Image (spheres, rainbow, N blue to C red):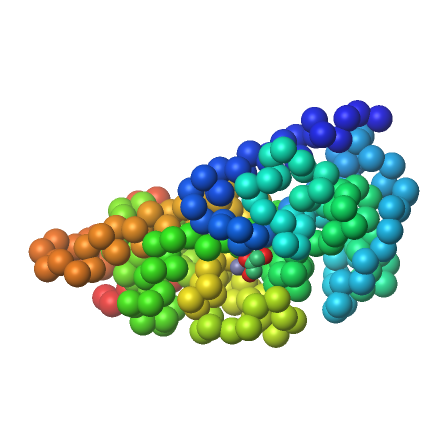
Length: 271
Ligand code: 2HA
Ligand code: ZN
């Protein structure tokens, strides 16, 4: 058996959480990440039939039965994952009943997965229903995106349009736009269900006055989506109080999307 602490998926989680912490997006226990792993790869590091303990999930995720996830722990700080991954992360398999997590590694202090597991697993199911290659769901509190929530209308079309106007790359990176939820109580099945509903349409979902969810094939791709939104939100917040003299026109955004061959939300442009 190879050393789990040297597994690429543990290494990547360490680097990603440290990076996000340093960006100032994941204060205290803010943020959480879930990543569906390849069973054969995990089996090189762990006996996938040796269950440390079982943890109730709190809802039914039948479509994910048998799938293995690495997930950040509840109450744990991104800042601390690098030095102690075995306490701050866990790897578990979803049992056949779809309602139980079978812990294979981690949460060493008796802890468990993030309180946002409903939003994560429901989002995995929603994304997989439209993209079989989706593997990652990431939640974080990016500073400028959050700031923008307080001064910009929380309307999907308007929010996306403003972001697209802020950087030339935006419509190419997230042509599907950004879904927006109003402020809702976090950590609940209800916000999980609402997020998953949006995830059928969008890879990015704003949680009003809380943060953002992203989904993608890899950690890097998912981070890149959120990072691009955050950059656009930063430009917005640096300019929103100043007279706007120039902008990227809708006709230019259309030109970009067509040149790069992306399937964009045509109804989000005013043409
Ligand atoms: O896990 O970010 O939404 C801490 C949070 C809750
Ligand atoms: Zn949060």
